[in-house]
Length: 185
Image 1 (tube, helix red, strand yellow):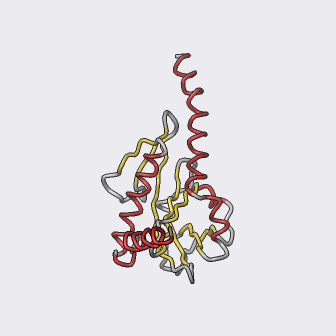
Image 2: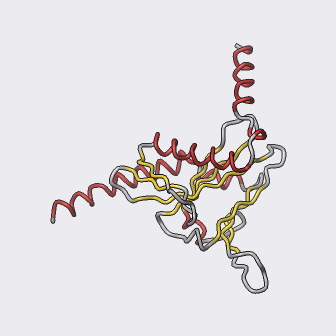
Image 3: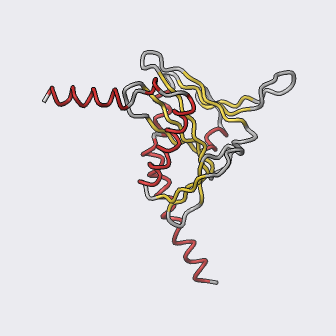
């Protein structure tokens, strides 16, 4: 039994050798991985032809609303899991149908996936920040997400499986209302 688990661990470390990929490859992997996870959850997934507006893909569950997805990926060292992810406000305007899909890559492991509704940034705190910048600063205004050992438990509230479950049950609840409107016309 121990030999089997050692062999599986070796396979995973080779398969999930994120250090062998450049940043663009890790980002592309995260985007495709999320698309497949949405598909497995019963969503229709639509790819964008050009990523000039901060939307990586659009997804829809049954007859529910279309969701716009912005994907971000981060490589982390388990000994020092610290990073910061940001979205320019011009490309990430907070609204109900916009979600941040975040993939955390630890060497030798499958990525950890999170799905955060953009409206979470309406109440900034130590994890979800609002950085208006402006003035003499060259940086553009942004929404940020701090990833540290202390903030990871807070982020777990937005674990992909948990959030996608809420979205699919919400989409199902919206379907009868849509049917009633169509039937009444």
